[in-house]
Length: 364
Length: 259
Image (tube, rainbow over all chains, first blue to last red; front, side, top):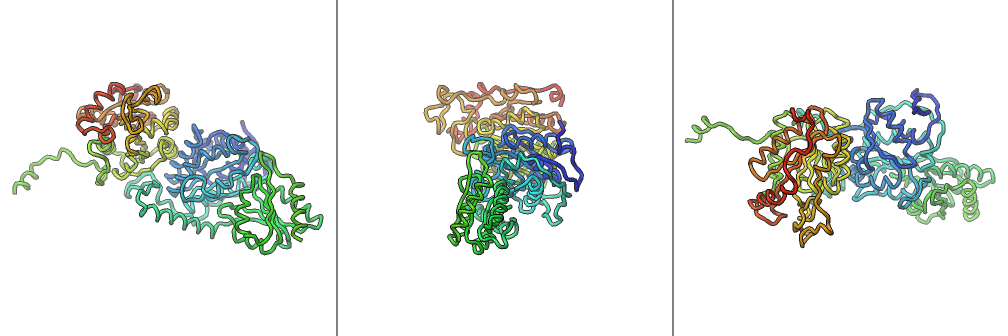
């Protein structure tokens, strides 16, 4: 049953790995104590990877009876201070929303990997990005946002999953790693990096467990009286504000002299980079802006970009979800155009190139 | 004063278990939860488990159960307590983990979670309080509501033709291979309460011995939502519930019998 990734452990080595295995490798390197999952395409390899690796390391692996059970097992493990993770794909993530809302309300750290597929409903198992709204705007009930990280390569699938555990612990909040099916199922080289746990992570002085010599601890999210719940809600809102101020991550290519810019995350960002390079060969001064955190969204940076360029093209594998955030931030300063493919189609470099050239003409 | 003299000669026969907090419960007069809480607290004390206990609380009347005990607690979403308990116990087998769930929580919305926690043989204990009604939301039909029983959502009485028959969850779970101890007790009389305490003790010991999954179903009166007095509720439980939900051990493996 051994696969490529199973035999790899040396820091500094460069190895071939599938995205789904890279999520697991990143989690294991970051000290993930417990993984709870349920099979669903296109992330099942991650469940299988963890079923081999976690027990071998003496850590917890449970294949749950449902995504609902898996996220609640995560909640239980997280309540004891463990680093806990689950993964799924779109329909399964919908089922997990109850648990994610409770994790947010309980202020428990946890990592949730969503390898997105086509929807709504059963949709298909092909790549998509239709869960942007669900992930970034809350997803479940109540006043909360998970932190959302969007890898655009197998390397990032590994690195951002490790980062997700640190962010979850730092802010006591669920963190979603939001990838499309291409990232999950692509095999490409990655460099195995040493994981270093940040020294300034807060102590888990709320964790349940052996209680000799201290007061009882309770993990709950109930506040029947508005006088109790509103301050809790406000504390969460304040936390998300802090996250917005400190944790924005993004990257750009060819933006210094760009006159038009593509904004894209995940696989469409990689496709768009090819298109940007091709456009530059044709004299079109295009650049790529790639958000890595979708919540917090790089609002200030996109606003700055809109002051420097003459037009923006948003490329997504959905009907225009991040587009709504970009339009809100750009606020009509420059034209914002959209290119999206649906149903499991992935945008091609030629499609992006054509859209860029059209925007270029329009902008000039 | 005679108080000093009687104090000197008095013998302490009953005290509050250390595991129970001093909080006044929110339960209605005649409710069985207070009795079950006390039995749980006494047993945790007796087995010396207080400092390693983590309880998982349900949605329902016992949602604030954690207020009434002096040990760690985690609230679960409706029906999910066995999954939450699985997460806790798998990472920390040294902890003593029990869930406390009502019939709506365990027998309806949480059916999948209880069946699979039992099927996996999780080394946890489930205290399953069955009062044949959704209490906290005001008395709607539960999965254990008896045929003909009037509730706010079966105003003409539960009609099995439309609403099905009450589920004997414990018997269903007993068909599984992994559970070690499944029993049904009641708290409608002093004798029944003594037996309930013994069952809880045995179930807790089952976990402490590392034997695996144990569940104690406790038939419990709900005078408020049954629309009867506390005294009548005890009678109603005995005359109506017990014939359908017979008391006694439903599954007990030999090792548990020796505990």
